[in-house]
Image: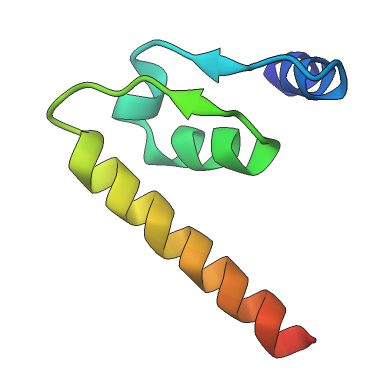
Amino acid sequence: MLRQAIQACRKAGKYVGICGQGPSDHLDFAQWLVQEGIESLSLNPDTVVDTWLQLSREADASVKEKAAAS
């Protein structure tokens, strides 16, 4: 259901973000949301730095994989 909502917003050119405990408590959920194209995440103050660092590392790895494949 979240995937459908994100896709519908993206298709319509609308902003889509999420606020809640989920991305703070579950890094895999935050990763999935980013992969699905969410534009912003609300995170608890105690998880912001660790979550963004991990998401950044994964984004860097993805860019490097794509560059190596081309």
